[in-house]
Image (cartoon, rainbow, N blue to C red; front, top):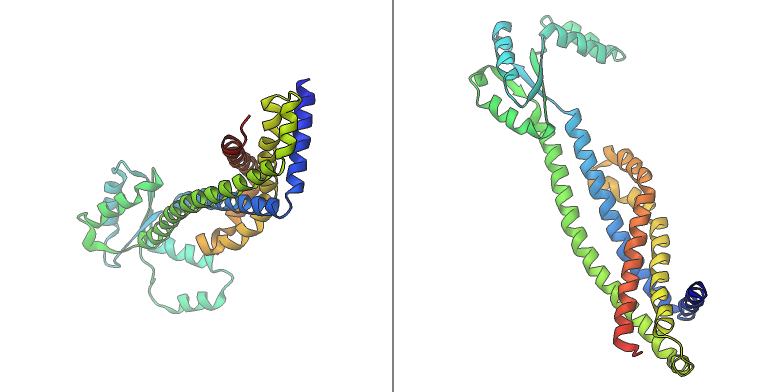
Length: 303
């Protein structure tokens, strides 16, 4: 009996969905827009965080010393840095090792190799390559080095260029979250309002049918459920349309948000979490549809 009731009310919900025509299109469209916004924001936010972690894992601090600084002093600096609790490792790169590495890296570029060989003295500087225990601690390490007793011996610290990338990621993440929350709330309210009005119109159009159902003894739930199912159907259709549109949108938007260098990472994350994203869309879509239905039923369907 329960299955028969659910089957009939679900069938009635589908009839309402198809009969509403342009109103159905409007409700599904605005629900789709709301779901697209939260999905794009979610994907970009997660991917920006993963991109930030990827950058942090790849970076290090390389401290270059002036050419007149003795190796003994550089080794003393390395020993001091290794005592920092934030430092995982500190590797000394001599001028000769730096030159060998440079030649290996540019083995396929004969012009560069000829140019470096034409210079009488090794133009490269000795350095100490520092890895942090935690990527978030590079700022602390860099500031400690800048304020150390060795600051006069240091030619440059290459961390600044990485800091700019990290700052960009952090700014992007904050902007995505703030904008995303505002837009999702705004379009969710609009979606609820439009779906609410569509179901209100459906209730009014079925006024005579509802009265007849009351007279023949139909239960309150039997009368209400088709409208609840109608809201659920709006949410399901919106989720399906949204997931179809989401991938091309993410592909287009990503380079402008986090930079073209990280497009591959984000698209890989999207593919990996595809099912999870769709289920989240489905849940939110159905929830918005049910909320709209219940509000309309409570306001206009007196049973």
